[in-house]
Length: 130
Image 1: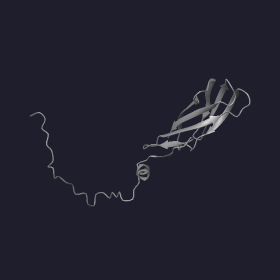
Image 2: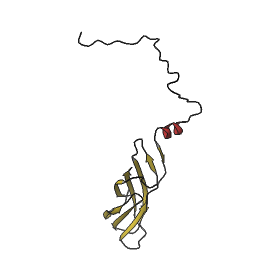
Image 3: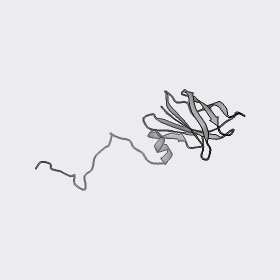
Image 4: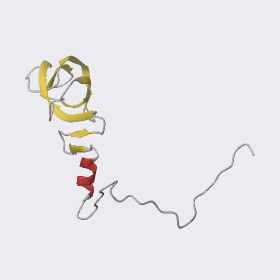
């Protein structure tokens, strides 16, 4: 035969004594996920850390200027430990802008420029880094 599959007996076991120490007593889901590298803050201005180090952050921003052209800093909920890779700013649902642009960003914040069609329209910010 070219390929022969062999299966273990139904009562097959492994002796892991001294090899692994896994205890599930009193372990809740959030603790288990944090131990695997998942942690975050699932709120309006929050973040999610993923195994491997990738971090996704999001937040809400409302213009503070009394005119239609402004620049505003948005501080990330947590600083990226190494680098912010990209930032996206979009209008909140139901709002329209003549233009939104990312002027600069760092591990701690983003500077956003905007040309409103009306004053103080809200926007959403998403950032990805590690």
